[in-house]
Image (cartoon, rainbow, N blue to C red):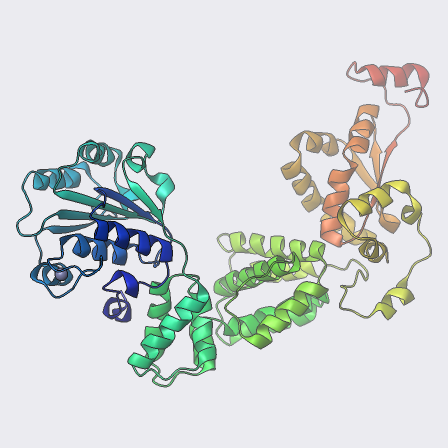
Length: 508
Ligand SMILES: [Zn+2]
């Protein structure tokens, strides 16, 4: 554990950073002498659960309490602070999960406190206890001796049996606000004479995501540099990679396969690990996705990077972004089976840049769009494609989607992968699709040949499944045309195909 965290552990309720409501309530109950015998402190790591548990342990035992606060100077307080007091028992349930550990506590409970008024048992990570251990604990919590106080702490309250939870007073700890972490970091940096600027401290606060422990541990690592500047902070937080992620996303948005491949081969040659980079890239894409959905988030990025992220989120089409995310997620999985670490990323890049004729992102100039505008294609007027377009995307986007037809070869080349997606999304429909064939995919019209009417019916009914996958893949709206081939009627007794046999296609 970070020594800064240890050295700056709060020693009174008022010194605790954040958790205003919890610390006030606890302090009041100590002052009023009305505290309980079993507490549950739940919440994210590094938010002060153990610190508050220890303060509470001292406060209720202090020989000289001050308005509910421990004095930290009397014998009991000093024993508890130094960890030598026999009446304070701390257990880490992560390493003592068994029932025998709880039995030991129960045995211990039989004896009155040696010096303090109350024996206090702090059980950290209590959700790790075995079922047997919980049962043993429950019996004690049902009838705790008057001289015992239990404080259970956990990051995963949902894993604790309700029977146990219901025996406790529960306090939910929240992530500590950025501003409070920042103030505390500033205070500690000043005390420790760590030279670090506010912008760096802000980055550290953002990166800690509400955990004071994490924030102080980063500050401690940074302090090893002596005087800390923004570049060092970024490097330690792994933020430098953001610039590389932004560059790669730019190249992918432009569908520059060559540029993107050259770029990653250069950064890998410079020592960047492909697997780690892929993770960082996915994390960056996640941020772009969140921002593009209109959220307001605090990311550990500097101002320039945040501005660039905002620009990219605005310029990239959601469908293209999702497509890229899926490709790199798959790369993440493919590292396990790939003979080289570069290959999964190279495949993802190649596929992300697969030529879909133009379909430029919004950032690209509008001029090229008008220049490339094809003659009015059939699907542009078709009612289906209008409906499809209106479901998910704005009018402006719909126009852009149909700006130019997707190259037929690209669609056919991707067909096996598209079939896989159909299988994932709707396995019953996939069975139908296995029995039909794609005749052509020109002008954003996917023509599918069927031998049986019920195949055609099924395709007509499930058009949106295929169209959705194509839209996501190529950023274009396709019209799905199922065509029934002449006769072939020696069929499976299906009523409609019987009708075909007797009356021909028209009647069915
Ligand atoms: Zn005291």
